[in-house]
Image (cartoon, rainbow over all chains, first blue to last red; front, side, top):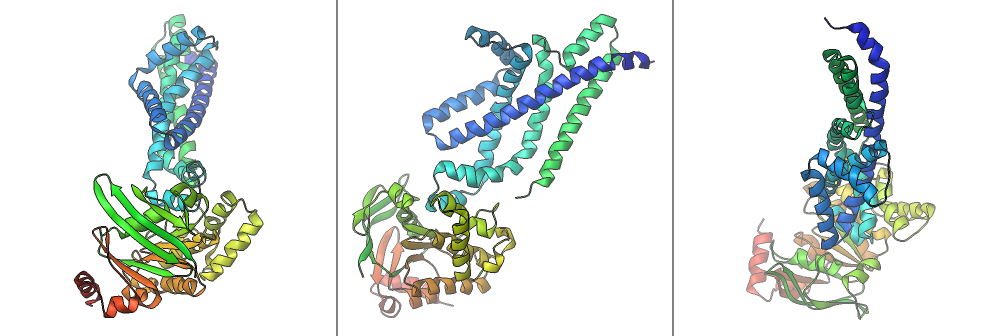
Length: 215
Length: 242
């Protein structure tokens, strides 16, 4: 039988940890969207060399295991004189990991808009940059929401990896509780439910915006 | 009328394919210049190169007898261009399609831009549609909006790349009527079209292109009634058969 009383007893700790997971996910996704918009804009308006650099970044974030990337950022940042606490190290790591995907999401969305609009903009006198800002990006936000939602789910799940650098998020607290009380099933069940709840709420919000935004 | 555009030895390549070969042409202010020819003959490439959308491999484009590269041509809004597929901005209303470039490129105030937009929209007779989005309009109305958007930028020359080819037959005339109005108002125009009846009526000069070359350049009267080349005769036979 499940020990319901125990599950209720640990609930405040689990909720606090869920809040940390939510905070990290929200911040990381916001930063990776901003990074994605900025880098995709640079990629679409720059020459070969800059594009190769961005390509390398994308391949790195997508090709190297996330756990390794988190460790690199955790151990490498202090080396170059940048000190963050665990929480912000986690946010930085997940933002970069996310950006590798959002850059490609935005870039592809732009490339999928028919070229004619850009040509029309060019003849009207828009610079490449103005074409992106006024013509293309307003149209790609809605198109990009479904893949961004997938990315959001990935970020929430990847945040569990931050337990290795002792961020007090849900997975870390789950492990702590298990080793404190030697109770496994109840803790796992509660953590699983929390992850599913977090993701459902975020997906619901995202779907809401998908319907709200009209082109 | 003074010379407004002359093109000398223009060559455009797509990779290895020689799409436009050594084209010379010249146009006076207020003239209507029609380019016709079979598909793949290079007529669209020629008009796109004139507009600055294709980079020519060699050749010169002179505006008012002054050589200009693509950048200058685009920055100075020398040309307005109307495309087969309209290319309106789908996320903006008809009015915003016209005011956005006025405000962002010409740096004209919002209220003045709206005034200009109202002017051009009533010229093409779709002022009543101004608050709708392009997808809510018929093809003919969308193309008229595209013409209005180009006109608002006050170009010296209007380029039309098969403006009626994507339209249902009953909408072709409303677009051709607007173009005829423009011509009567003295606008200089270069038109790529398959509408031979319209070409005959409106053109001052008409050329036939094939394989990237100008096969014949003539007055519309001679072009249709007394063509110089066999190629023109067979082209006209094909397009005028029905």
